[in-house]
Length: 151
Length: 121
Image (cartoon, rainbow over all chains, first blue to last red; front, side):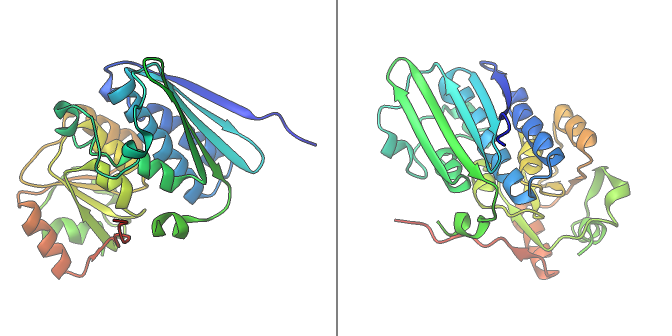
C-alpha cells in the first residue's frame, strides 16, 4: 500500500532577511516528529535553509516546498528571479553574485549551491533567463553523511 | 569539555542559557564570520564562535544542531537573535577576547577543530 505523500509549503517574502530559516525550522520539526534520523533531518534543514537564502538573495523571494515520500523527501525551491545564466559557474564554490549587504551579514559567499548538492542525494536546477529558477533536491532516508562530507 | 568550563576559560558572560551550561558537553569548535562556510563545514555538536550578531547566526546554529554560540570581540547579538535563542534553548556567551585568542585558549584546553574535507581544484 502506498501512502499519499505529505506536503508542506511556505512563501519566502522578498526582502525579509529575518524570516529566512522559518520554513526550514518547520520542516525540521515535522521530520523530527516523524522519527526521521537526525542526520537526514539536518541535511534537509540545511538544504531548505540554503534554498530560502538563495531565493531571498537572488530570486526576490519565492516558495519552498517539502514533499515526504516513504523512503525519501524532496525539497523544491522556486523563485521568479532573473534565472541563472551559467549553472556550472554557479556551482563553483566561491562564485557568487550576492550583493555586499548580504555578504556583510555572513552569507552569499558562493557556497550555497555546492552545499545543497553535498547534502542531497540528487539535485536538479531548472532555470530560464528572465523567468526564474526551480531547485529540486532529493534526500533519501539512509545515512550517508560520510559520503556527503567526502565530496 | 562542559560548556561552563569553556565559558570560564574565555572569561565569557552568559547572556542566555545559564541552566544548560553543566549539561552541554563539547568536543570541537569552529570560528568564523562567514555563515556560508559554517553551513558547509561545521559538524553537529560543534561550538560556534563568531563576531557576527544577526538572527541568522542563531538560525545557522539551529539548522546544524550546534549546541551554543560564543560572540567574540565583545560583540552583543541583536535582540531578535537573543529572542530566537531563548525560544529554542540555545545558550549564548559573550566573550571579550578576539577570535584568535578565544580559539587559541580553547584549543590549548583540548577542544578539537572540525575536519575540513579536501577541496576539489
